[in-house]
Amino acid sequence: MKSMMDLWRRLADELASWCHTSATLDYKKLESRVEYEGLSFLTITLPSFGKDFERSLEVGFVESNSFSSFKKKNGLPLFLGGFLSQIFDISSGVLLTEPCKDSILAIRQLTLLFSKILLPCSNAREIGAFQSYVKCEEDLEEWESRHDFDASAFNRVSRLLFGDVFSKVDQLVYNNELIPRHGPGSTADRISGNQKYDLFSWTQRLESLFPFGEYAIPNWRYNYRYDDVKILEPGEEIPVKVISVPKTLRTPRIIAMEPAHVQYMQQAVSLALTEHLESETVAGNSRINLAHYFLGFSHQEPNRHLAARGSIRGDLATLDLSEASDRVHIQHVEALFHGFPSLWEAIQVTRSSKAEIPALGLSLWSLRKYASMGSALCFPIEAMVFLAAIFLGIEEKLKRPLDRKSIIDLRGKVRVYGDDLIVPVDCVPAILDVLARLGFKVNVNKSFWNGKFRESCGGDYYDGTDVTPVRFRRRFPRDRGDVSEVISLVAFRNHLYERGLWQTTSWLDKKIGKVLPHFPIVEPTSPGLGRRSFLPYQAEKIDVDTQAPRVRAFVSIPRIPANSASGEGSLLKCLLPSRTLPFEDIRHLERSGRPSVVDIKLRWIVPF
Image (cartoon, rainbow, N blue to C red):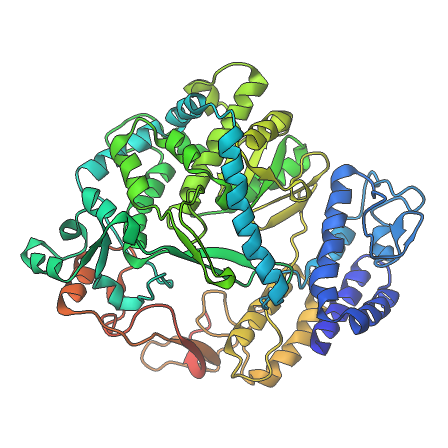
């Protein structure tokens, strides 16, 4: 923990020099609080300070209940007071007309530095997260019993936005033209790597629309594989396995691992939907695809650009939803796809309706949520549901139904990436009302539309200035054996350098140099673990064959687990169309999946 505190002090001193103040007393306070509270002060208490600070920027003054665990003077915390006094009036706590943007960045950097460090939560917090998952399911059942959900209005807006795409994908499903694929992750039935191409389970629901012989074997010549596969009746289906993965020390992220055969066909539907939703026009239709103006699944930059614009003009709000994916009800999805029978059937048969929560010793046998994170269809479908809800809210604000022309006129004013929503400020009350009626929870503390602060898709802006903090993700490495920590520290160092925090970067270079004795300047595209710099790299030798410069640097080398499929499974893998080109690795039929171990080796590499 000492290295983490030293890092904080170096950053505080450098940022204080930017803002012509001193952080000496701030570090002394940090030392005393860490001695008493431990790591939680850095990872929980400081981020809470940062969230209260964001809220103060939003409302324009420091509220009396903000910064509750810190001493105050005239309403302002004494901690980081040198920075805060350049942002808020020291006598009233009101936001200054021209606050110091460097000080805003400094406070966010110092309070959120360790907010997303990848460390396991306490057992109590982990159990609490699983209980919240169950409580969310209970909330959905309650909403289902009392809601006034207007499915026809939801479907009408959905058809306007996505009708052309749904029609095309509906046709692909009907003609058996979807392309399935496996992901690299873990599955509920513990099948990994190449073994996923030898599926021994399939559901009766899948078989009714996606026959095993059409999708899970190379061709019908291999129909004898039906003798080995078990077609599961609805009561026999494998439930999703609900687990936790590190997110923050305050709470873990709860995800659900799908069975391999279900994930396989989810990927098929997801690929078809996302490709057509993002395309400017849909194949076979000359009309502009409206959805591509407002949705994104591959790139977050459009959201960040609009967030930056909204922070300057004040015309766009950024909204954040709590438990977003877990609150998408199956009835929302049914209304979304109503009128496209083949596509809707595909959505249904690739959905898991049972969940097992080992940490609680609990099983849920009739899920009301459409899907949890872990389903390949969770992300695109939640985005479409939220977009339809936004336009329903805009209709209520305008007091008239939207048509294609009025939707096109909203280009550059609405954007959805997962649960990151950007909407017009004047429509916020109506949109919040619609979201609430649909059972969603808006996280008010992470939604911004009043002041000049906006955040979306990892980009944070105040009046057009990027105030995104660089986050420290893992503990400091003890030696080169802590491979993940070494790689993370190098990436963190390079982000700080690009931010202009060069004094802290220089200190980190000495720390890294003790672990990586060879740490040359390299370009971002280089495969080596090296330093980013505005200075040119220095070639250490010239390759005699290519006449290209070389430097000596450490390179991360992943160890792909050894596993193989049968001859039929291997043939299926090679015949499936794939954008990832597995054949780039000549041993892809012998090794596959996520790396089990990553090594660091010293190599001669190109520095660019």
